[in-house]
Amino acid sequence: MIALHRPLRLWPLVVALAAVGAQAVGAQVGTTTDIITGTVTGPDSQPLAGAVVVATSLETRVSRQRTTDLHGRFTIVFPDGGGRYELTARFIGMAPAQVSVARQADEDRIEASIRMGLFAVPLEPVTVSARSSARSDGAGPGSTARSFDPERLARLPINASDLNTVATLQPGVLGIRESDSTATAFSVAGQRPTANNITLDGLSFGSGSVPQDAVRSIRVVTNAYDVARGQFSGGLIASTTRGGTNVPQGSFTYALRDRSFAWGEATASPFGQGATQNQLGGGMGGPIVPNRLFVFAALQGRWRGQALPSLASADPGTLVRLGVSPDSAARFVALASATGAPVTVSGRSDDRATNNTLGLLRLDWQASDVHTLTLRLDGSWESQEPTRVGTLAVPATGGTRTTRGGGLMASLTSYFGGRFINELRGYVARQHREARAFLALPSALVNVASALPNGGQGIATLTFGGNGGLPQHSDNRSLEIADEFSWLPGPTAHRLKVGVDVIGTRLEESQTPNQFGTFIFPSLAALAAGSPATFTRTLVPQVHPGTAWNSAVYAGDTWRAGGGLQLTYGARLEAAHFSGAPPHNHAVDS
Image (cartoon, rainbow, N blue to C red):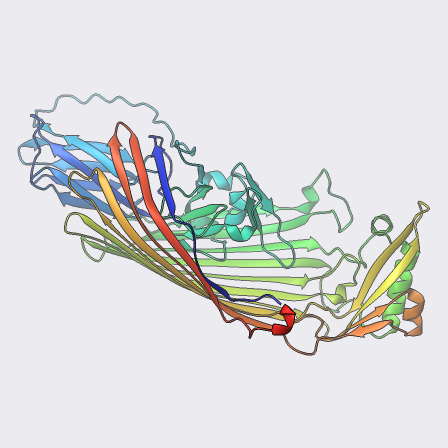
């Protein structure tokens, strides 16, 4: 029995220091809010007070403006702006000045200096154009990360909606394939998948699947030198979703993988002929109220069919490789049918069908110049039929599996006092997983010894009847609340921040094995005679409820020392607590 209670423990205090150079990449990990600071000066290099600075996102075409203070400084907070902006400064009696800025590497904020000149009479325009360098997806000094944009992922032969699969594109990340009872996962530095963390729009995201057309950017990080990052020791997948813009736009994708086009290791046998998959999805968004209220929605469906590997579909060559002679397999099927237990289920396809539907709806509301509210609703549904069918079992031993989940996220970004920024986020989610057997019957295991064509002896266990691992279900509920408060003192060379993150997870699992019992026959002769060697059955249900709490507090500073040098340092304290353990069993100690 696994206890679900562990005493409160404090993780070691982590102090991190990193120097980051200037190399352009995607948005900052863990947050979707950009901070643009700078100074506006006149022709004499003196600061201009009262200049109007307008920042326009090159991705969303949404604009925000601020007026410089007595020292000519300005700060613009741009939630979910995309990382690239066009700044325009205007002042009475001077010509408008325009500059383009972009977030560099792991920069904590974007800095821009704007120098304005006197208004001049325009001459004939002279246009000079050059190809701008593409934004690199490489990592800056001191970091180990890589960014992936949807356009690039769409050209790769992978499932771009599965964030765990995207993580395998990062060097040093080992993928773990999905099975009929487990989801896709990955490992970093040989650690178990539970050492990883997946975030969506800055908060933990358990399902790990997002509609492909709803993804703005994905970043895989294998270091934690920023104190704002946590809850992982392996890898972090930080992803952000698309939002509506001032320009109505959408995208639709369709992908087909046909097993008839496969080559290499593909064979005609169901054990190696591959799968056929159709995936159709789309997303569209736009303004409800320009510059104020935006909406974006995405929906995706995936239908996957794969020939079912089982004892009934195995050819003679495959049976020999599995240690069973074709004659023994044929006799086993005949004897199993004679017991009255079905070998196949009528109305069921010979293929294993796995269907998946993902949906996302997002609303962005700029309530005022200082408050921006984001709401996101996500949902998923997945089914597999048949599932849990062994390679040496008849198809009727399988069952069906369904998974349903959804969540609601709210984020409020506030900028006040000209120096203070607060980001409050919350996410509540629930996921229900259920699996049921085709037949509510005991399972039967038969040990078969076969003389193989190569002269060897094979011993295998063949299965018919019900499924000893079904039924089972699990219900997972989670709540996360995170808040980060930032202060930009003086000339904004420093950004001081403190934050707190609390995650609560309630899990209830019912995975009672062998609920209907299991007969074990030592040979085919014993099966023919109806003489099992043993019969076992679990009578007491095994329901495991438990609650886990993970919390963290941190404080840090990002210092722009100048010359492209950025120093990030701070301290982070984490704690974990598990409750809901069964009473202590003293007999186990003895």
